Image 1: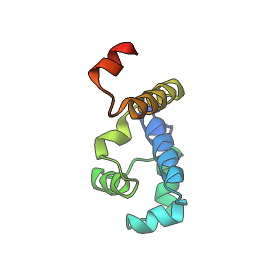
Image 2 (image 1 turned 30 degrees about the horizontal axis):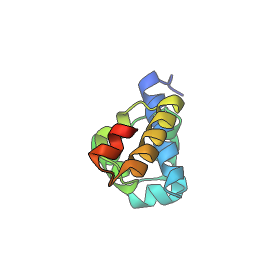
Image 3 (image 1 turned 60 degrees about the horizontal axis):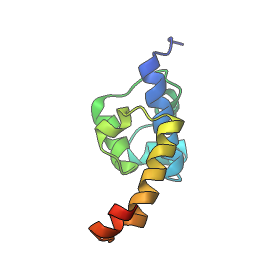
Length: 102
């Protein structure tokens, strides 16, 4: 087994999380991107990284842009983003005067 690079490990964790959030198991994702569950498993464990075309297909299946697979998202950033999204939703449609009051 090859040593995991930090980049491959982060990418693998990101793909695994996105796959799970999409309600797919490794075999289902593999079928959708025309590869094997073994390749998906190796990717998620940071052992290997498939060709860019395969990563693009994976991104498409989980409704992401290819570049978004490489965005480092830590737990704190996710909480901040979630809070920002909720606040944005609550403020949508408010007038400038309402927003000044906030």
